[in-house]
Each structure stands twice: as structure tokens, then as C-alpha cells.
Amino acid sequence: MIEITRGDLFSADVAALVNPVNGVGVMKRGLSRQFKTRFPENHEQYQAACAPDPLTPGTVLVHDRGGLFGDADRPRYILNVVTKQHWSDLSGRDHIETGVAEMAETVQARAIDSLAVPALGCGGGGLDWTDVRPILKSGLAPLADADTRVLLFAPRSSEPPDDTGADNAGRLSAAPALTQGRALLLLLLNVSGSGDEGPTIHATHNLAYLLQCAGEPLRLRFEPDPHGLQAPGLDAVLRRMEGHFLDRTSADGRERLRPYSDAVSRAKASVSSTPEASARLDRTRQLIGDFLSDEGLELLATVLWIVRHDPEARRAPTPVVRTIHDWSRRTATRFSAEQIAAAWTRLREHGWLRSKSKESERSPSSSS
Image (cartoon, rainbow, N blue to C red; front, side, top):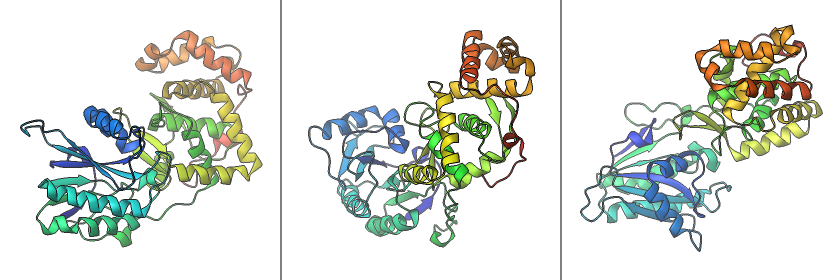
């Protein structure tokens, strides 16, 4: 039986989990990074298998957690399916077809009675769920005929499946337009955050605030938040972008946004053709500098908001330090006076310590 579902793949009570990987031994983004964190021995086996020669797309590498007596907690198996050659490549339909066929053979050969399968090739792989879904259902059909339970996890962006697991391909959400505001935000998300996982949701709000203050008319109204600035209208925009332009991950326990490589390429092409947009992007990037971390973005945005609402704060950092330490219990212990002064100096050196512009005072809108 093939059951289409959504949610957390790792919470599935199955004998095997399927992990989409590349052929060069790198688990640095998205779902594969979560596998790396949760199953380090699988990662070690995978890296060893990729050296000295890369694995071929379509290959399935089996990691058996059962040990000598097969008494490991479920899942017993990790099925690493190579969906692309290099981690920066896009996945190919032929790679998915080959991988699914080999995966089905592996499941039958090892008498695996249940498995959870993600949307192979979607997200960072660049393939569309409407194309991948029939490949998975067709390739895994022999398992369903053999009474193997198959949980097929649809992308978050797809419509929830009905209770019968019937096809929903005709009801998938259409891709939103890549507006100038969305393109600029994608490019900033691509260079910000922690490691390779992209910034947190909180940091994304702070990034959008900086971008709007740089002159981009996002038409968002920002409010003080325990983690910097927050715009109620931005969450709806991000949800529309998810599954089309970016992915949401939670490898470190905090939700992060990671732009798709093909979406970043489209955003670069779009922004490069508009001098004003390019100038706003460059201005924001130059300000951020080495404040790329989630906390760095929070600090820059918070200091800027204070400066734009308190004329005294434009003259010296002392009032800013006092306000941030009164902002919340968290900020009082998280940011030292020296760190706050450094952010204030950064803003001053790049010409951001000025009164509010008309661009940043527009009312909220979902058109960003």
C-alpha cells in the first residue's frame, strides 16, 4: 500500500528511511543534513563509499543499523538514494527513475516491510512534485503489490492528501511570481544565516527590515519583537514562496529558510537587469558585512530601528545600549555594550543613521 502523507519523515514508524544524497559524499543541506545529524554512522559509511570514486546517480547505498542480531531501534535501514552527481547539481528524472527501481529491488531483497520516502529530487533538486510523484508511485508499485507499507511524503507546498491517499496533482499550489522584492530577499537569504542552512525565520524578518530601510518598497509594517523586528505580513509571503523558491529546514532545532539554487539564479538575473534593485541589494550586503549570523542580523536591525525612532540614538550609542538592555530579558544578556556599539558604528560608517524614509513607512501588503 502506498500512502501519501506530509509532516516529519523521521517520526514515521517504519523499518527503513530513504535519504536523498549526491554522489560526492557531502550532506550539507536540507534533509540529508538532518540525516547526517541523526545517523552519524550512516554518514561515515556514505562518505567512505564516495571515496575515491563518486557514487553514480541512481545508486542505492544501504546502511543497516541492526548490527549482528538485527535488534536496532526502528528504522533499521537507511536507504541512501543518489539523486544527483554533485551537491550543487540539479536532480534528473532519469536518476530518480533508476534510483526508485533499485530501491524497490533492495526493499524486496531484504524483506523490508515498511519505508518512508521523501519527495526525491524536489526542493533543492529542482524537480517539480507533479513530475516526481508519478515516477515514485509507478516505481514503488511492486512493493505495494507485495504488501509493503510505503509512506510517500509530499512537499510542504503541496495540497494535503485526502484520507484515501488519492491523487492530488491537480490541486497543487501554483508557483507565485518572482517579484523584485522576493528576488532581493532570496539573494540576501542565500548569503546569510548559520552555516549552509540559511537564516532562521526571525533573522529573515530582520533581513527584510534592512532591505526595506535600504529603499526597497516591500510595503511591510515592522514591529518590535523579542528577536528584533517582525512584520506580520511577511509570514504569508514566505509561505507562498516555500516549495517553489525556498525550503524550510530544522536541522538545529530552529526553523531555517534555504533558497533553491535555481531560484537564486533566476533572482540574480532579474535583479541584475534593474539598477535600482541592484543598488539596494549592494547597500544592504555592504552593511551586513560580517554581521551574517542570526544574532548579527538581529542586532543590526534592532539598533537601526531604535536609531530611526529616537533622535538621541543617532548621536551616540549609549541610548541604544540602554534601550536594547531594556528590550527584553534575552537581549539584556545576549548583547554586550561593546557589541551594540559595534553595530551602531557599522550603521554610521555606511550612512544608515538617518531619519525614516517614506519607503519604510508604507502600510503592509502581500505584494512583496
